[in-house]
Amino acid sequence: MRISDLCLIAFVGIGFAAGTQEPSPNSNKVHSDASEIPKGYEVGEKSVSPDGRFAILYPVRDQETNATPDLMNVLVRLKPYAVLQEIGEEPCFQGMRGAPQARWNGSSVVAIWLSQKWGNTDLVIYEIESDKVKRIEKIWPEVVKIFEKDFHDRFLKKYPKEDDSFTFVSDEDSDWGHNLVFKDRKVTLKVFADNKPNLAGGPHWTAALHATWNLDTARFEKVDFKPGMISDRPWLR
Image (tube, rainbow, N blue to C red; front, side, top):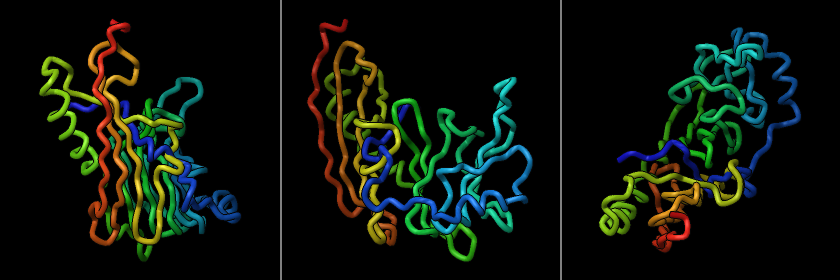
């Protein structure tokens, strides 16, 4: 099915109030010493690991043409410089819709997602060991499956002429704070979806997911799916 790329996780509305780790006081020093970073890139200030060794690089936007260099976003070791993982499917400068963002659990586990218009999407967990990506856990496809089933079974069967698409949205902000929380080897999530977040008229569907992902088993160990009410918006037609 087609799912709008105007997506997000409300839960993932990221500030990760609990379990959040901010860059260490030494992070800025690492930035200034990272002379090996290739031309055309800049370090994502909010993406640096607590020990200052790892970060996401963004292509630098040309302020005159607003063009983005043909450089993919990458997760890197800052010094000595080394690329650990390419991120996303197309290059995005900082602040651009679709740009990757990161939240660290210590300096070896990082959650990376893409920031979209209505929220966030494509959540992936990367584990780093010996300066290499040891493990990749793609949480987002599993999240999508849960919402798709309810959307098809509960909404499209009742309204088969409606668009087969919905949007992941944030109920608070687009940064995933207290809605994505690391605790030891687990990640708790709160995710929200809406088929018409722009308040368009007609049948309206919503749903929410509260779940716990186990990093050791690479699967959800607890899933609390909360179907919302299906209603009509005749006043908006």
